[in-house]
Image 1: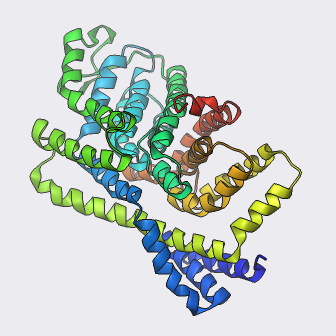
Image 2 (image 1 turned 60 degrees about the vertical axis):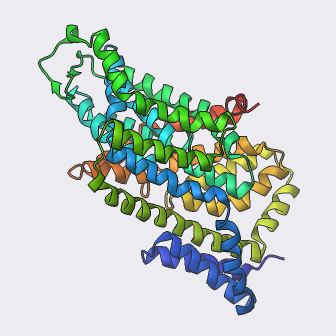
Image 3 (image 1 turned 180 degrees about the vertical axis):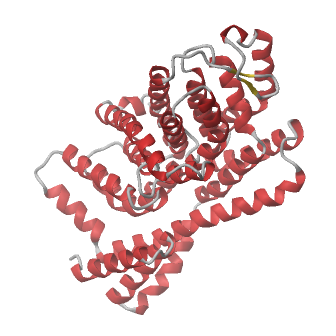
Length: 441
């Protein structure tokens, strides 16, 4: 029997903490502890460290700080700039080429780091100023970058997919494969939109040294030699996704081991090959990685305690039984889940939403006969909406950090039209599950 008073206490403490500005990880953990304490007393409190130890000892969690570290190395090693340079030289001749180059660079960089904010900061730092130089509107430049960066949580490797795999017992490798086509589909929609909305004036081009000469004209497009040269320069960076993902798909190593391989390879590329990362910067890279990983894992710990309290008061079991007994279509239940994810995305960040809802929604989805891999992709596409919708959309704040003089109102307005593209991909994957499952099968 579900405890109504326990649910009231749980929600009251959580909302109170959030209103006070308590960090989300501590808010989740505190509300869970108080609920457990008031529901069954102090005797059950010993289960909290046991639950945390058993959950965090999962080998897959090691991948999170490793992918964060790899992203920091590539960010400070200017890998994103080299990738954008290649995309720009190859695509700049077409209308909207700079925008398409930005989307391509976001997609490619996402296949390396698995983080949306890192993608926005790394690629957006060079792509947005270049688009504005080519007379793109700020709204188009900001929107492409915010949603392009969100590809980092769908195109593998993806930290949210890793968390879902750990919570659901699904295969991380299969989830990675399932995220490819939906991610590419969203990137294609963004590219088409960039071509349609780009200014009709001829675009200027990046010179060999990486600078932009606004006096250049259309006939000064890159020669074949220049294109080959830029590809050769960035080739070590371009090979990284093949090494990380190819090894996973070939069965050479697990996603966690792939993250370790990626860290070592990125160090070789940035320290030894390009020498774009100085040894004296390594302490800063490690400290930044530790801060980000600690923040993520703090949320994980708090959400695990929160989830334990939900299980203790019987909410997942109650909801699963209640929904199973309803005489409504499973698709109506899935629609309700999507609405809940969308609503939570306004107020919480991705990791919290995943860790709170997966233990509740996953058993319901399995009882309704949904494919676990497909359901994970549906969930993560909803998480893409969470990182671009106000007021807590993290990609919005990433753009604000890059352009502190721009108003948040303008950034939000820039992103709203692009939300429809994410919804379009969500609808396509929803009605045509094979879009996500064809490579898996």
